[in-house]
Image 1 (spheres, rainbow, N blue to C red):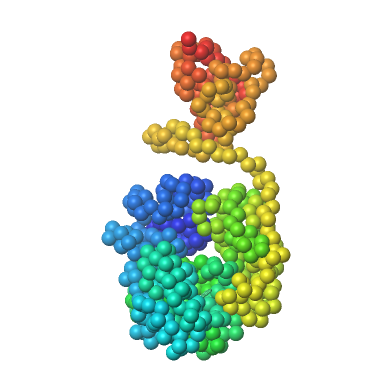
Image 2: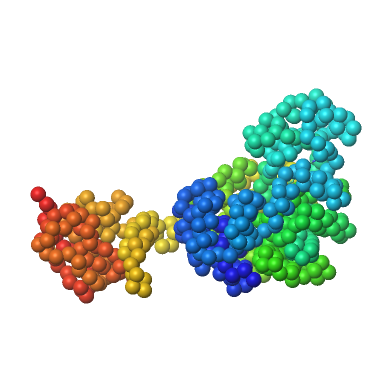
Length: 592
Ligand code: MV4
């Protein structure tokens, strides 16, 4: 088994992976950006290392910084989660070359499935059909016209190296072909740097059904049932479920076998998902996602299989702990994504900010996979998924009712969330009757009355912004300079002090200290504690910022420093003495 996994990700998926590692007795290494210093994944991991930077590019996508942490931590493997490096073969190869295990598929498989044309060819060679269309790149719109005349309209022009629907154009008739082809090409070039396009029949009301597969390095391939992800908006999934509603068992069987064939065709191992479009009882290969997906928990709840645990086993070279005949899919699972977005009017505007209240629902069949706790901040720089609520029920109506019950219980304050949209979807008769398709949320669902303006409340502990302070610490007799992020309470009082970083109202000296109004050179302590050391000497010159004494308070040592340069004229404390907030410890006569 792997011994130490570095999780090259953040948020709920990093938390998910850390939990699986802990259950297996595998050590965990978190990495974090400057904004994630206090994030949940950092708090849960055994070790955590700063990557620096704020944006994803500066932090979670900084290969050099991650390679450095691998080296310093002694991690033997990396779990990439989803997004970030999960489908980056340069990264996978870079770590593999250093003898580090990439917890994912072989890079060759990622490459084959990485673009729509080569994956379509691979699937076709394995006997799995995509939507009828071409595999050659289009050289002119006249080929689009010829295809439409032969197979019927509408047709879809797709960017070969695109994704997420970008570069896709629907063409309803011959006279639309030219402008659609040109705009598909230019969008593809802008978005992906390459403008190759191909054409296929356009399905007008398909469902998005994807099949979970997992394989080991010993040639064992297993499919673990499908997920229906049709309730989505602009290629952002909102609700996922397993099994797909109104999905006959023989189609499931055929889709499972097709998915395994596609996986085998590219020498796949680890967890993966084969996506299909499903319409009128037929399914068509769309693409393969060579990573663990956001919605993997619905498969876990109906199969009882811990997919992350199996990923870790497979990456260790072990065999899968089950075979196809062992898979039993039971009941119905539904997941909703809870994003910090306001779905009002169907706009889904991002709503970053501090989560002041977060009380996930509990109860039978109710799972919350979250990446945040109360007090945590959802940053504008990253995906705003707060977490996923997943329910299990013995059948679909039970699961829907359970999800609606759970969503009603959910309390989140401080940011707007997608929960009202999730409720609108789950309580809609079209969803109950499985009449929805991939176009349903955008074309049919009415979100005009939906609002989720964030409830802004004070957090329970009263928000005090944190500031960076450096202190000296001794660990086993070795001295370290340590950075602390502490509540912004000034350490030294007086004007011109470098000790208190932010402009907060400063504490005045307590009455009876004899110092009168506190001014420059009157040094006080900010909180109750014990003076453990006095380092300055009366009568000697002292520089601004130099330590006068050390106050132990709240189990931490705080340097009480000179706020101005001058001569130390009075020292009012000694080691061992107890002090209270505002007590004067020293007076400095300004120099000159
Ligand atoms: C299609 C299609 C209908 N017909 N292809 C959009 C993103 C890309 N992954 C594939 N997509 C589609 N391809 C044909 N021939 C409809 C979609 C589509 C879609 C697919 C899956 C999930 C959500 C979708 C939303 C809109 C359109």
